[in-house]
Length: 113
Image (tube, rainbow, N blue to C red; front, side, top):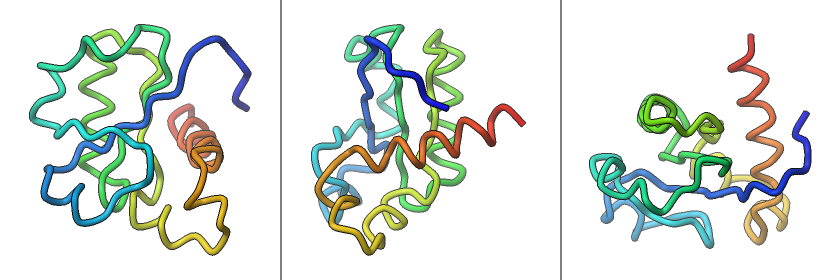
């Protein structure tokens, strides 16, 4: 279960700019996967970093692994990606990043198993 910490949660859409501009989760930064190494300065080592792609599979998982191997130990990917987030029936899913913690917790549980 997620514990409250002083770390900030940074949600990063790692898709190409064109994909991001078509549709994205509100208030999520866009850093295409191929530019992650050039933008490590935007992250603190204590941050919880959630990588997001369209469906929450290979691309976001690979980006999270890249960040993890660069020393960011709290990296995860959003299960279901942007499509899963935006298809949620609750307004909370579209209006707040709080729902990400539910997805993040599920991802953490899967990662630990």
